[in-house]
Length: 241
Image: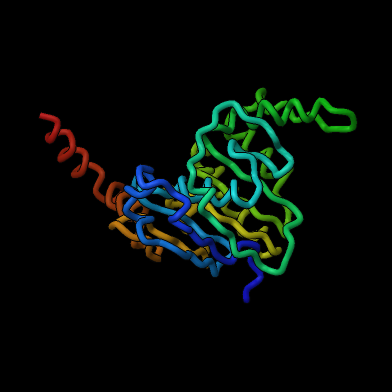
């Protein structure tokens, strides 16, 4: 047994209705068990391939607030999570996490608002996240809440970060993973996906499967564009007509 907080997840499809859209997600069809072996695991794939759906279900099943935050956050502005969390069972490791955070890029504004409300409580340190840019706010959350021996579930953390700030986040994640943290991350970033030693699960081609960094679309499309920018732009612009 490895030292990960989440060793595996299991899906009992009997708890998912026959009419559920979840049964139409090709990458998840027939998946009953998924094991994790790396401290850092990325979920990659096209939009709508099921990455965020599975990541969110893992977070909610583990006890995080559906809209994000630490396990102590308890609020709801819009109930959007799927029924997959009702069918999911998590195989936990022997270690108990000391810290944890669930980030959803699409609901980070709501989390930042709640974070400021919590900071107004006695003895709390005000963060004033809404006075920072989106990217600065997220990095402030990382610096405040991300610590060794924690579980961090991140949905597209690169959304508000410049390439330089993505490198900053990459360094932080790598450092914390070496200190006992576990990360599950949905990402399209060719920078973050280049993390040394990370596992990468692709949701493309109709099934979950492991891929190398160089096999990801994020890497291949970015490399192709950078190396052949003028040619690709000419071809793409011609296809408009």
